[in-house]
Every structure is written in C-alpha cells, then in structure tokens.
Image (tube, rainbow, N blue to C red; front, side):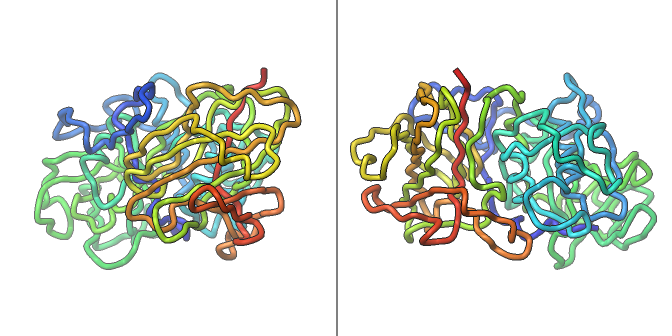
Length: 429
C-alpha cells in the first residue's frame, strides 16, 4: 500500500487527440481528447492489442506510483518497441527527500521525468535491492505529461486507446495479493469501493468494458461498466495482475495522468532548468495575467529550439520571448513574441519554436513567457520548500523574475524564495 502523495493535486488537465498534432498555425489550439468525435468501441483491452506492459510486483515498498509510471511508459511504445523501465530508479533517483517506504505522487513523477533524470532500463537498475546507480542517463526524454480528472471517462478511454494506459489513483483496502476485502471479488477479479476514503494507491487503466455486469461486484453497482486495470502486486493478483474496477468506484478517474510526449534522448542536446522538484507551488497577482522568466548562460554555440512550462488553467493564452545578450529586464520592453498560442487544458508542455534562436558560448539570455489564464489567480508554476519532502529544493542556482504587466519585475529568489518552472532546450551547432 502506498500513498499517492502530497503533490497529487489538480494538475495537467490538457489532453490531445493526435500524437502528431499539427502545430504550424499561429496561434494554434491543442484540443482535448474529450472533444475528439471519433467513435469509441464499447469495450477495449490493451492486452488484445499487444500493449500490456510487464507485470511488476512492488513488494512491501511504497512504490506503486513509480511502478505504475514505469509500466505506463512501457505501454506508450508497445507493441512496436519493447522496454522494461526501472521503478527503482524513479523512486530512488529523484530530487526529493524520502525513501521507497514513504510513498510518492504525481508531482514527483513529473519532476523526475521532465528533468530528464529518467527513465532508465530495469536491467541497469533492478528493483528492490536497495541500490540505485547515480550515473545512469535517461534512455528516453519525456517532454509532455497530461492529466485527466473529474471522471472524464470519454477522455480516459481515448487516452488509453491512443497511448496504451492511463495512471489513476484509487482507494485500496487490500494490503497485498493474499489479503481479502469486502470490496474485492476474488472470483470475478472485480473491485468496487463506495466509501469515503481518499485515494491511496495507483493502478494502470489499460482498457474498459461498458457491458461488464454490475452484479459481478461485491457491492451492487447501479449500472454496468468497468475499467480494466493492471495492479503492481505481481502476476498472482487477479488475472495475471489485471482486475476490473467499477465505473462507479468513487475514486477511479478522479485523478489521472497520461504520458503523451516521449521522445528519443537525442531530441535535444541540453536542458536548462532550475526546478528539479518541479511545481510545488504557484505565483500570480490575483488574476490570470502574468509574465515569468528565467535567465540562463549558454554552455556553447547552441540553437535554442524549444521552451517547456506549465499551463495551470484552461484556455491559457501564451506568448514566448527570448532576450539575447541579457543585461536586465529593461530590455524586455522592445521585444516581440517569437511564438504564441492557446493551450486549452492544464499541463506541462514543450513548445517547439518555429525558428531557433542562435546562442553564442557564454551568452546570457532570458526566456520569457506571458500567460493569460482565465479563472486562475496564480498562473505561474514555481518550486519552493513546501514541506519535509521538498526540503532539498535549491534556489541558489536560479535567476528568475515575474511581472504583472512586463514593466516592473520581481526577482523571485529574493522576493518569494522560489525558482520559476521554466525550461529551455538547445541543440549544439
């Protein structure tokens, strides 16, 4: 049993219909899966499509969150490419304070993956031995992670259909494979929790069946239908690790994440960042309008090709600027945006620039993003010490700024004791 953790809050709601979404138009809109009009089947099972990931066993450790994430990433590439990613590395080589018995959350996963700390292969960092190498490089680069919430079952199904799996939090009162529960039917491999407890366990949704009979659950459900889910308790649980969770389960689908942008490790040569713990808080001026910036120094002759940031609300309008030969934020007044667009849902995004910005070795440059996020009073993601788990946050390596109008700027390390969550991606020339 493991908690989904202190960072499993309402993040990353945006999802898309097409992995190859056309981005040529400016501004462009990224559409939610729930807006896609294609027909979905009444039942779908990733196992039948050859997309079932390797069944893993978390054992006595609180690592369901890491095991589920490693398996979801495997499903992303199936059936064309087969990998087994290391849950050990996810749970031990992140930037947070804690151990494998402490549990974890979606914020920890997203910080680890978007910082390119992983994933690595299971064969290079085997699970459960208490040892994890710190010299391993990621075998893939995760550039986009999306979230689904509020039981948007249509969006969940489309995400499963496109990406193979959705990671969801549930309440699980079973302790392990061999324990029993009034909510779990061992003969039917079915689970339906209808109480008031909050989520404490992560599973993978790998399919659905709209006609799964309601009377196959121990507690009588009002309607048919179940998600097909893979657990992290080995092949002896359920049907080779798989069981059915009622659509009416109080927690399934409330808080989900989907790994939707995973690329080869040579997509960029370098990532500039200061937020290894990712988003642990928010900044703003009481409305949805805000500018935020990070200052970086080029490591060589490079092309700045993309920018990564969080959109914290629906219909976020954004503009991206780059100030070369940066001296101070007064230079910003003369800038015009390099790119702009609209992000329909929340999420972490890597936005590729239409034209790369040439940087010279040792050149200080500012990446600036303006957002206007309706119904959001704090639209900027930031990293700060939010508790014991994030006591490792280091703000000494950052130079970040925020501004309400782009005229008067605040240094966030001094004013708010935080780092701005804003990354830059470059290729060497």
